[in-house]
Image (cartoon, rainbow, N blue to C red; front, side, top):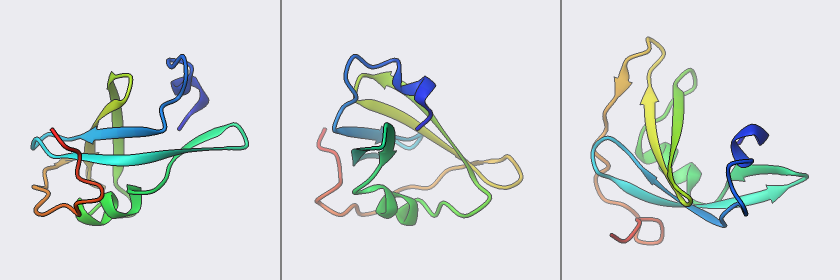
Length: 95
């Protein structure tokens, strides 16, 4: 996560809820290492379930202090709309 993005937080949360354009929501843990904030546990599974490939662009919009809206674009710049299907219970965010 860019450091300019993290300045919007009083304290960086330990997890984010990722929401997308289909109403899917997903819990991802946040890790702070050497002053950098990264998406950790849950992110790799999110990438696999949403079929994010190398060359895709992923954007994040801060909705609340712990919720991000995720929009995925393919290599042609076209928004990718994937219905999540079944989430792993460990990471599916409870509504």
